[in-house]
Amino acid sequence: MKIDIYQVDAFATRPFEGNPAAVCPLDQWLPDELMQSIAMENNLSETAFFVPEEEGYRIRWFTPVAEVDLCGHATLASAWVLFNCLGLEGDEVIFLSRSGRLPVRRNENQLELDFPAQSPRPCATPEGIAQAIGAEPLECREFVDLLVIFDDPAAVREARPDMAALAALDYRGIIITAPGEDHDFISRFFGPAVGVPEDPVTGSAHTKLTPYWAGRLGKNCLRARQVSARGGDLLCTLNGERVLIAGQAVLYLRGSLEV
Image (cartoon, rainbow, N blue to C red):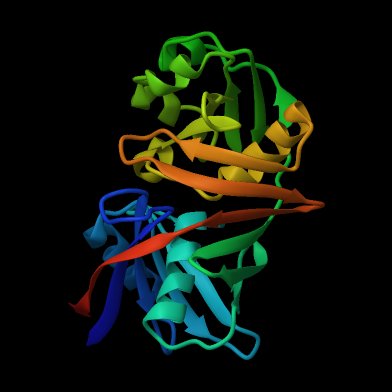
């Protein structure tokens, strides 16, 4: 069986930046075990699969080791493939997912994700988190992921975390964040518990970062940068109970799988 595959660098303006995602358009679902095996073989932070439905496209995302409930960069990559490779007309595509209805809108050279806001709640600072990251945080918050907040951008940029210690925490991922020098805020995302030691640019993390920083800075439109080795820029807007996350994407690879 042949399956089309595209690899797209999301939240990037040229190849080798942003976050690479694999995208596999399907006519009907493959067995879950096969989709997980494909994601493991791809060895990217996410592989997205989607199938057309009456209202739009049902989408699912797999890391190399697990299916996840929400992924931003692979959704942006999937929309890019639909608009630029598969001839989808119009300026909006609707994805249906475990996290509900996810519109993606095309605006000139950018795509804008429309995701549910996930406001992180204050929580106790987990024991050992300062040692695991290498700096003492200002505070911590939680919503599926742990949000670890610093005042000094250097604490985020220079962190060399203990992945085993982070994986032992009861969270999907660990987000570290601080005010930015040239952006409203910066961040990094670590997900060793789901097979992603450091994710280059994490759209879903910004559904939590945006409400936090909008409240702290008193503004709803925020310029963000994820300061991983590859790096990526995001324009984030808090729109009531939704977060709009805009960025660009570029195609790196297209081909077919033999399975």
